Image 1 (spheres, rainbow, N blue to C red):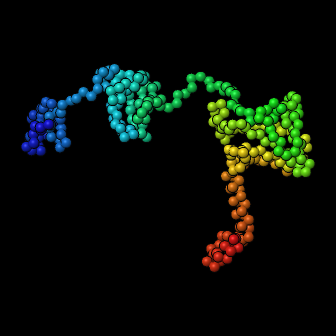
Image 2 (cartoon, one colour; image 1 turned 90 degrees about the vertical axis):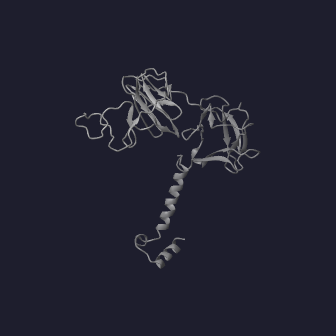
Image 3 (cartoon, rainbow, N blue to C red; image 1 turned 30 degrees about the horizontal axis):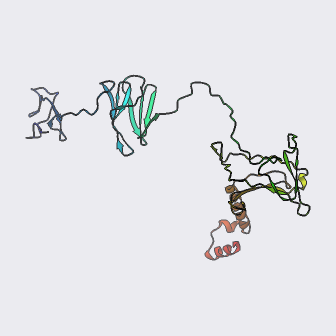
Length: 307
């Protein structure tokens, strides 16, 4: 737009000065002008209507953030916020300005008891509202799946790989509902195995995916625990005739030593083994050899003793 006065830098607008005491060359009265970048008076630029149809013609708040590489124009008018001219369909409680801001790639809005945030795609509640009633716990049945029943009607049935077997009463005294294994007299072992006709998914049980807190339960009764070394469970995952060829789960319950099963995480076991190995190596050194400064020849001698 053209400027009114470019002849000298003295043509500055002084709207609060009077004609008697105003500086020489001051602009005292002007219509439809605004200061330009250099402070001179310039004709006011025209206007363009960006959006219309707001709930209230009085716009209380404007905010234009850049989120996820896109720029959005937010306007607070009446009881709601408009994004690029479209209402949020949320009524904000209270009156006056709707507070707006942005941080961490999100825009936030609040007034009264209403709080919303925008992530560049969707609007969400801002913060978790306090419960309006007393919290109560309700027990639900955990999803489960039966791996094997060990009774006489089970299909497919168990194969006896070593020793012999019988069907006996189970822990509820129901006939033929438990499988008894009798060790082989020569090896002192008894084992059985079952192969499903089709692959089984014991990770997804009833639509629930398993995790580290899953439990595997089995009822085993030992007639003479002192004569039992261990009980081993294996799950074969290899397709083909031999499911235990190269992919399987394996766990041993050591019975004879103390009758207790110690469940350990693999990383914890590895750490303890490393500490024990380090302790054995350092035991061959004197305290001064560990802490004192060593010459290259002394350090070489120590390395030879540790390898």
